[in-house]
Image 1: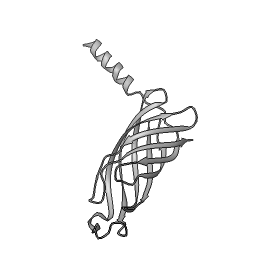
Image 2: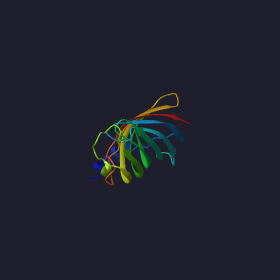
Image 3: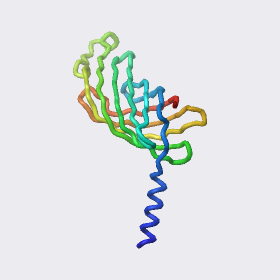
Image 4: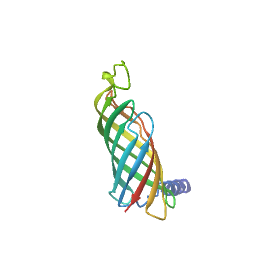
Length: 160
């Protein structure tokens, strides 16, 4: 039993090894789905393996225009040197309006307005030898009826 407990603690400690995160990171988060799509992203370290992330996104296309502000608390764990995975929780608010000039006679008033949401995030990231980090994450969420509900995004950030 002692050997099994020791083995469990060693494996748990190995998989949950914390990664030192950069004090600050600023860049872009390029998303998909039918959500906002393009965000300016800022990360601020709170400790050696956790951080806050704030994202301001907007979209202006043929179908709708809008903005969204998101805040997330994240935990970061090392997979290999410079390669991490992270998970977090948070929320935010936004506003969207359909472009009636491009939508003809369709009435989208039910899809317009201010919304609030709560969200989670899970992703992977790689920090290069230079102060550049690439990430890929999935952000599901639940919110009022104007919120799309999920986002898959590629991030590129300068670390300082």
